[in-house]
Length: 244
Image (tube, rainbow, N blue to C red; front, side, top):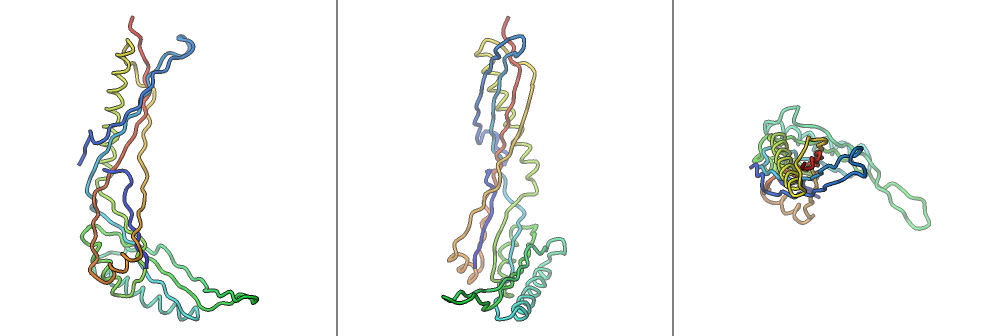
């Protein structure tokens, strides 16, 4: 059995000074009349917050010599798991089938044609949990009803949008402060804003080992969601006004 956890790669309490990496450029055109000089800066900021939502992907993998036997075993165990999730208070909108697969198990004897030795049926559901404290007991309840696959836990926050906007705003502040410093040092001032582009880092997964997954199945499952970190980067371009 394999257990995989997911977290946000960017780290995200609004902490405007958490990270403020800035790169800057003062570009002068070949012709002052056609290409006036510009100031280009890039600012980065981080915002941290605690996750308050989680999704757990779990299910059953069944093996048997015939498709009918593998499907019957899988259906019985998966139905018990879904009924248990409902008993824990999850509604229909919180339980989604994300994978159903039937595949043969093959044997390849030397100097002979391949032959089917059995079948594997896999059925996975995603449970969307509105409380972090429900993650451990949801996994334990599913394992007790026959689940043998826990393929992913993803932590999120209902405040992610506001945190992302706060990080973007902080990044803009850092970019503008450096642009103003550059313009003054170059003997001029900052003109109007010409372009502003933002971006947020993607999510990166981390995977638990096989041994850890087995230990978690044999005892109450401990879950530590940690902190989410959102990193926002903005690149801004301003006109440069030379002193007269």
